Amino acid sequence: MRPQVRDLYKRFLIVGVDYPHPEGMAFVRRKVKEAFRENAHLTHEATSQTLTHVHNSESQADVNRAVGRGRRVCKDIVGFIQLKKYRAMRERYGIKEEDKAREAEAYDFHAK
Amino acid sequence: MRVLVAVKRVVDYAVKVRVRPDKTAVELQNVKMSMNPFCENAMEEAVRLKEAKLATEIVAVSVGPKQAQETLRTALAMGADRGVHIVTDMRADQELQPLAVAKLLRTVVDEVKPDLVLMGKQAIDGDNCQTGPMLAGLLGWPQATFAAKLEVADSKKEVTVERETDTGTQKLQMGLPAVVTADLRLNAPRYATLPNIMKAKKKPIATRDAAAAGVDLAPRNKVTNVTDPPPRAAGAVVESVDDLVAKLKADGLV
Image 1 (spheres, rainbow over the protein chains, first blue to last red):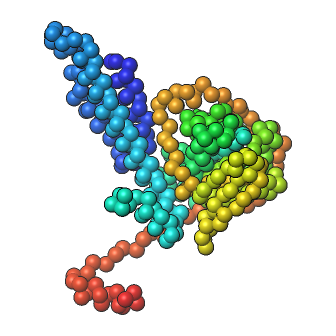
Image 2: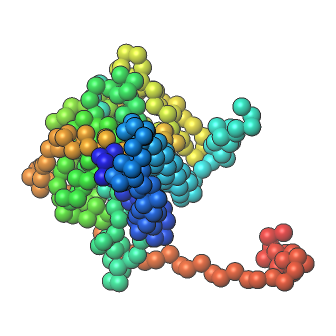
Image 3: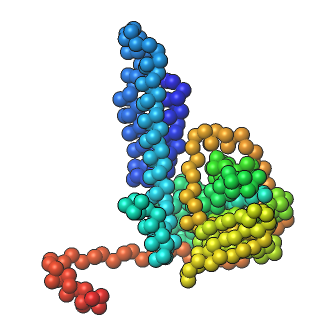
């Protein structure tokens, strides 16, 4: 397994700990392994060698692209975790009317 | 400017806590623990001060059992330079009370000599809101609690803090050194990513024993009883809109 792929899997494990899902880590592991298996052909030795006219750099580019996609998904998960935490804290520790207005202003995409 | 950030290892916010059968405490065995969300806000503010070149060093401190090291590692991964771990096996949500923690933090302040002490406004397990103000009182330093905005003056000798109170926002100006406690809307805390976690493994954490600090750690309050909140009453199903209106009128809501 290439080092960047292993690095990506470790990143998923780190965010998986905090992922808010009833199944928790089990869910994250299952989904991540499925996704990795789907892309396994990119780093599979036999496949990349039979295409003899393909340069090494091209298959590396495919791997880079897949790893890049994975890292973006990781970033999305982090954003989701942060949002859930913010909303839970906001619910529990209260938000005043003027803050609601301020928040609505900050997130009003139509106004911008 | 040196910043000291106090963080606490608490039950994770998403965990559905259970009360122990003997009704003396919350069940903490095999329960997910993480850094207090308000302490994350405090840590993030310290890191932002460092990124803005206003702070030169960030020291993270935590009082707790051996596992509190993980919380300190998270703080280091977020951007602290070094950590101080005060080890104690007292339960952080019951036996180890804010006054004792404030006294322990004072010993750390005397050793680290920070210009600014940041911490969360309250911990989600104890909800005392006392540690910050008590520490400020013990040190004789100015304090600003529930900070929603923190600005450091160019002289680096003063800070302006906007506080969130029940009646509105209060703006305070105070000289450093000072104690500031962070509220939720101070900033959006960053998530510790793999490269930062790897870097944090090399940062030093000094360990101290709470009992050896020469501080009175005895609890002043005694927890007599811990119970679940009353279960929510079941709702009633209505057949039509008229039924709904009639029911609302009967309950005096319309």
